[in-house]
Amino acid sequence: MPRPVDRLARFPRPIAIVHGDGSLGPVASLDGDAVDDEPWAIEATYQKSGRPCLVIRTVRSSRDMNPRGLPVEDASIQMVNFLARADRPLGHGLTAPSRASSRTGFDQVRVAVNGAAVQEVEVAIDGEGVRGTRMDALDAAVVELAWHGQAVFVTGWPDALQTLALRAATPADVAHL
Image (cartoon, rainbow, N blue to C red):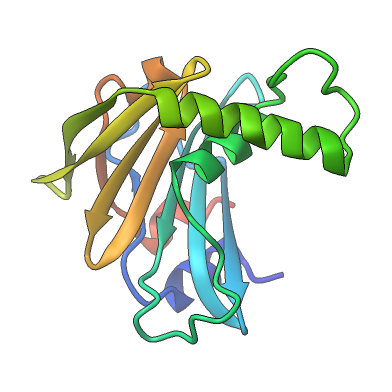
């Protein structure tokens, strides 16, 4: 498995992380996904009390990639993944992971996200305002932004998104991992 600093170097464009040290502290983990050995997405996770409180997923453009087999990236998927990692139950009776319970949980999230009001937001990235959307559902929130020709999804508990400012990550930001 590549080291986080190597993942960062291999990603073709900048990845977004929280600007400043603030109450979230440093990046707790930096994970990535690949398609056909090409980096597809990188996730910077911030934790409080050992549980994720904010995940920033930078997804590269599919422009230079074969579209076959590319994952779907949307607000519903980000919410499902965040809630699963945060170990937050999606509904009664969903304690044992199975195909059926996973599907039920995903359906619950999709319904909640599809029913959520979409708000226009502006988030500073490297000091410049980037317009996007925010949806709040299931006591969590997802912000979706377009930055440098790629998608940035910021998913977390609403209090972690209150004063959100982002910047491009540097190797020093992940050297401790």
